[in-house]
Image (cartoon, rainbow, N blue to C red):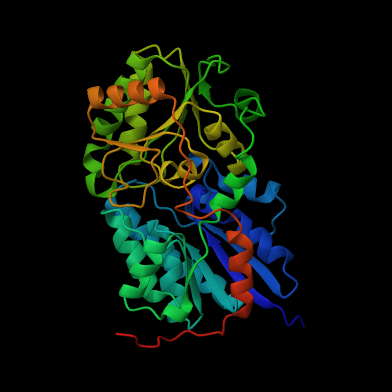
Length: 386
C-alpha cells in the first residue's frame, strides 16, 4: 500500500483549471503526494468549453467525474446544482478517501466541495481565499474560508483578511496565484505563437490580427443577473463602434448566463460583426499568450485583475463583478455605459502604456502549495483565535 499523502483536487469550471494547473503538476510530480483529480459541474460541459478535454490532453488522469449542473442558469438552478454537488461529491470522497481535499476560489459549485469535505472530517485546503468582490462570490469565498483548514491566498491583503476572519495565522500562506506561474512562462513572448482560428474554431468572421486586436470576456453578475442582457448589449454596441479586430469568449455558467448568451446571439443576427470572432474556450497557456499579445482586455473577468496585472495588459473592467479586488495600474474601471466603455478603449489604445505588477505573486505558487500539502499536519478542526 502506498504511503503517499492523497490530495483530492476538485475542478468545477474552466477558470478553476487554469487557476490550479501548475498545482496539479506539482502534486503529480511530488514524490510523497498522490493526485486524485475530480472534475465536476460546468468543467464537463461542452456548452461552456468542456475544460475536461484540456485536462486530459495535458496528461492528467481523472479519478472521478461529477455531473451536477442543473439547467436554467438562474439562482434556483445554482442553489440546486450546489445541493446535487454535495450529494455526489460525498460519495466520491467516500470512495477515494483523500487525506486532504483542495477547492479553488469562489464559484458557487465550490461550496459543495467545502461542505462535503467538512462534514466528512476531511482536511480542506482553499486556494484564493480572502479576496473581496462585493457580490455572491464574496459570500461563498468567505464561507469556504471558515470551512477550510488551510489557506493558500494570492496577496498580502487577502492573507490579512483571512486572519481577521479568525483563521489561525499558522495555516494562512501567501503563495501567490498559481495562474501567475503560467503567465510567467508567456511574459517574455510578445507575439502570438499560434493561429486561434485554426486551433480552436469558434464562430464569426476571422479578422486579421497582425495589426492588433482586442479580447472580450464578460460574465453575468449573480446579484444583477436580471440585467445581464442589458449589460452585454452595452459592450456589444461599444465593440461595434470601435470596430477593431476582436476575439470574444463565451460567459461562465452563472445565473444570468442565458441573458448574456441571448444578447450576444441576437446582436450577432441583427448586425454584421465583421471584426469579431467568438470562442468557447482555450488552453490556459494559449489564452494568456493571446492576452499578452492583445491591445487590451475588456469585460469583467478576474483575469484582467490577476494575470493581466502581471503581464501589463491594459484591462477595461466593466461593472461591479470585481469590486474592491486588489488591482495593478493596468485596470481602468467603467460602468455599463456604452460611451464610457468606448472612451476607455480609445484612451487605452492611444496611450499604449503597459505597467506590470506582482500584486498576485511572481510565479512558483504551484510548487509552494504542493510542498505545503505534504508538510502540513492533517487537521479538520479549528483552533480558536478570536
